[in-house]
Length: 336
Image 1 (cartoon, rainbow, N blue to C red):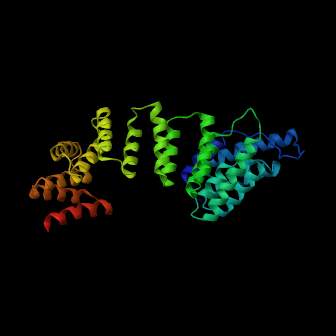
Image 2 (cartoon, rainbow, N blue to C red; image 1 turned 180 degrees about the horizontal axis):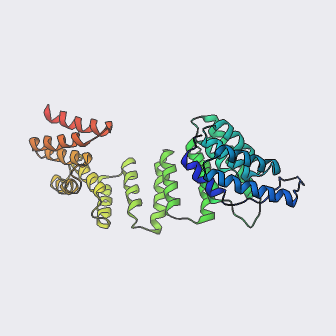
Image 3 (cartoon, rainbow, N blue to C red; image 1 turned 180 degrees about the vertical axis):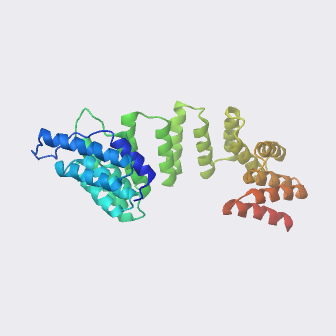
């Protein structure tokens, strides 16, 4: 019987711990000491069977555990993991659902994860509903406990996946209350607004963090990209390029973009060539940098040398059709 290695590792980790019996809300069922001992025995036997890759035996042993504690979410989840590892995803999904219904406080992850992994809008929405229910259960549970950070992160990813931007931002607000505001919070907001096509809001998200750390080069680069998208003045763009390179003088990507911008906006070609020459010296096989350098040479009237570097760019471009098309466009323009 074939079982996927990552599922096996997860099972071994999880089966290291014997679950305590969590009763389903509203039920008064109890088990005897003898049944508890039997449950523990079968649990450890299942663990040993999995270590020996005897999955049929592990399934049978976990079914014994299930017979003793039919509403034990841990047992149901591990059964689901074995079914998933065996490629029986429909059965795994049903078992994960039973685990979640038995214990929505803790057994939400595998069920929602499998639903969200499907390229199916209905299942994706079902996965989000699972997360929302788990969130409400945790939020209304023990007041001394906070909603799990992992649940909030998974909910955020789910909302982003389906484009529910407002809900994603609301979850990020909740995450900030749990973990505090930091660079990752700002980055998440920036990405959400960028995907939502709200560049002004994205700028606000970046600027809020830059007030805390004005020299964070990552966020200055985000700010620069947004400035270009929103049509900032050339003078302001160049000032930002200079600011970033003053903080990070070896940032080749920024150096290349600055050089290309100078070249294509009738800027200082000598300065553009100096910066571009540095990039190809550091990364002589980078097709983007080679293309920039070749185009700058063409603008300076050095077409033969330009074609040499553009040819090298084309040779190194790989399968990126967009980059290849741009390089070919430059070559064709020179050869006219």
